[in-house]
Amino acid sequence: MSRKSSFRSSGRLDAVLVLFSLAVGVLFLRLFQLQILDWANLTAAAERNRTEMIYQTAPRGFVYDRDGVVLATNRPMFSLIYLPSHKALADLRPLAQELAAQLRRDPKDILASLEEATQEDSVVRLAENLPPRVMFRLSELKPVYPGVDLVMEAERYYPLGNFASHLIGYVGRMDPRDWLKLRSDGYRLDSPVGRMGIEKVFESVLRGRDGAIRMEVDAQGRLKRQLDRIPWQPGDSLTLTVNSAVQEVAESDLRRTISGRGAAVVLDPRNGAILALASTPDFNLNELAASAPPSERPANPADLPEFNRAISGTYAPGSTFKIVVGAAGLNEGRFTVNDTIFCPGYFKLGRRIFKCWTWDLYHRGHGLVNWWTGFAQSCDVYFYEMGLRTGGALIEKYAGLFGLGRLTRIALPGESPGRLFGPKTLAAEGRPWYDGDTVNLSIGQGGMLVTPIQMAVLISAVANGGTLWRPHYIERVHYADGGPDYVQQPEKTGEVVLKPAVWQDLRQALRLVVTSGTAHGANIAGLDVRGKTGTAQNSAGRAHSWFVAYAGPPGQPPSVAVAVLVENGGESWVYAVPIARDIFKAAFGIGKPRPWARLGLLSKPAAPPPNRGSGGGRA
Picture 1 (cartoon, rainbow, N blue to C red):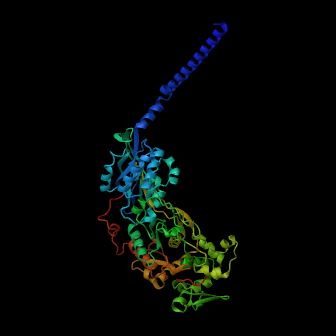
Picture 2: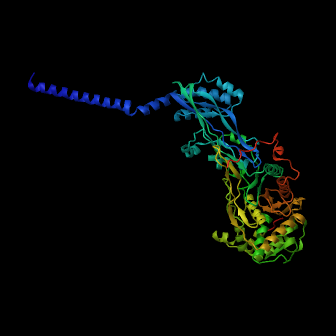
Picture 3: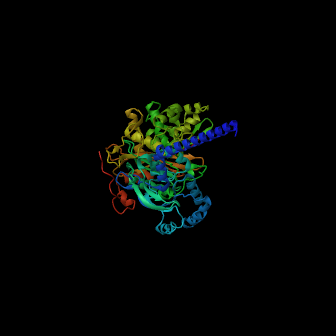
């Protein structure tokens, strides 16, 4: 071999040795990384590959009324879960068919859940609250289909069904969009979550912390044995200001009206505490909690039973608005209680004729009226005249002072601000204001829209001398860790300042409405009841009926204020006034049993946790 060839062979060998050394070095470094640097992470990953966490929903905090009646609690339930294995998606079809037959559901829906669990490599809950017969049948599938299992956890339960449904709300399953927002807070895709009312607003308080069972899983996804358990922690409990007797009466009376649609809001005018908040039609909380989140909503939300008419429904206030007109005109000196007019049953303004409500019913007027008779008999002609004397701008201003046209800020989603109506509002919309608008506004018609809860706040302000309280329904929060209770304090949101004589004139007129006027049916022996009726014209059909009032024992500050609205109820004294009368009787214990007796409970419930630290309105 020549020297040149020998040199070439030696060079190739050196190159091979270098490459070999580099490969060994890389392999050594990789082994060092796996055995030393990544040992902890790889060990944890291996542990995860042979274990599975089965989460158990924690009991949510209880919800009580002011007397200890349990409104929301928990009960044990069995849930069907699926732990994905490494099988192909096609193998899931027989399982989906079998489960669909047992659960009486669409196999496509179940297959979609199984595939989603496999893709996400996470446990999915396929069914909840299984009846014992179904649970036993499903347990027989566990040896046949790896990954199928049953676990016990806590389910939200509402012992009174429909009771206070719009206020309490319900717990339900999340849709994927909700989960994307909540997963950073520890929610799983199958976690129950408050979807409405108090359950939604106080989700973080009521939720609690879920427990879990760590299970050993074999290669086929079968649960082998329990390794350890993480105990759940229950949520905090709430005591509400709600009086169950008042709430039950309001709901049952509203259901019996001609339309079955309406609302009633009952407040303590001394602090804004909600004694009742009812809206009909209502719904069974347990049935809604068990349903899947709706994929589509109707074009008109008011068609849903979940629509809360007490805070979201907007209506013309009708003659209840005469309280505002009287406050504005008397306080600004635009007219006095002794000014009189003659009511022939109609009012002429230029070429237009505006009728009094008596003309439609009796084809006559009220005759000679002043403030007292005009208010007590709700004479529209009287208020047409006095409204023009006062002026639309002043009426609009005082309506705003009484809280109309803005949110009461009750802690519930979906509240409507209504609509303020007057020269200022229309000017902002680029529209002129006419005397005919003032005439309509004077009897609560035209473009003015209010909610029942706004009218409850308004009449409460009359009862207490001008303070607007933020309506609240929480009395206490009882913390599960034993800490001192949180006690809700009233919150003032505004004040109406009137001359003392004007307050006196308003209150005396409200008393005359009950003793000798359009709300005579609300006169209750032993109570000082004062209020104002209203029958608001409705272009879509029969008029809506209103009654706003407050009451208390004679000589004592009023302690109950109410606003009742009956959709398409016609004359206010037919439905709205009797409902308010029943509410007052229940609130003051006149001829009504204790709440738990009316609600069908066998005995008084356990007490909550102890304190640890265009023309023609009608009356």
